Image 1: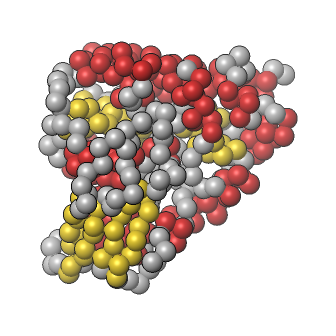
Image 2: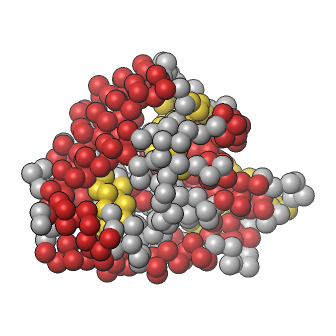
Length: 376
């Protein structure tokens, strides 16, 4: 039996290796998903909302949020200085978008609990080059009688699904619902001719990130291989399941193998990622009028709503971030994707995600809420 066939069939499971996402259909490290079960289990309104906010999507599952509690109704949000992506996100654009997702999830959870969220962004000034030690947001809660949005119900159901999607096309009503929830910054399209251009750019950009050693190294350094590593560090890119445990023992799945462009693991990962991109049946993208920190936050909030509405519609979403990144080898594709979508400066494409009917229901690991709270 070849190593490739071993990868495909051992344990009756399927492994997909992909830059920024590894999918495994097998039993998971359940303790690393405990925060999903703890959402809403806190008596005070600030922790109640935070327990949902930490489930927000974020780049490479870095979970870059740190929160200083002021009271039961007040908190300050910071970026964790140890959770940047210095190579593929040198200006913290993606990290900021992830914090925007966090803030939107927080606001939705607060509203459902009868509180309005007053969010003051960058109260000590915006962070120009990278997010620094200054606060990202000052949050104050106050009682409200306003009707909460039904999107809240999907905060614990939402997933990022990196598996290949079925050929079934989303309906126009589904696409319209996503667009309505996302707001004015979003565009949703299932136009076949347009999609092929986007897919080609995303494929080429993925190859650049895979085949450029220092960008691939950033992903490899964040891999958690096997249940033991995932339990110890419930973040980053997870590889788990019975076959992974065996392959890890034999060295077939290891950081060294995943750095080696001649290895079966590396080749299969690239091949399967490209295959997943090719199954896209629609796209949603978020464009902002400029590239300010405030607009990056708004992009994250819009993406959070899009992802929740897609979940409500029975659809999956998967960000394709490679072509949007700001490092030298990606410059050509960054220009192409803006040109293809008709986006001209100072406007900036902040998020691009494929949508369709996927199959993964896997929750990403999360650090417990208490580990994301700063000492007073």
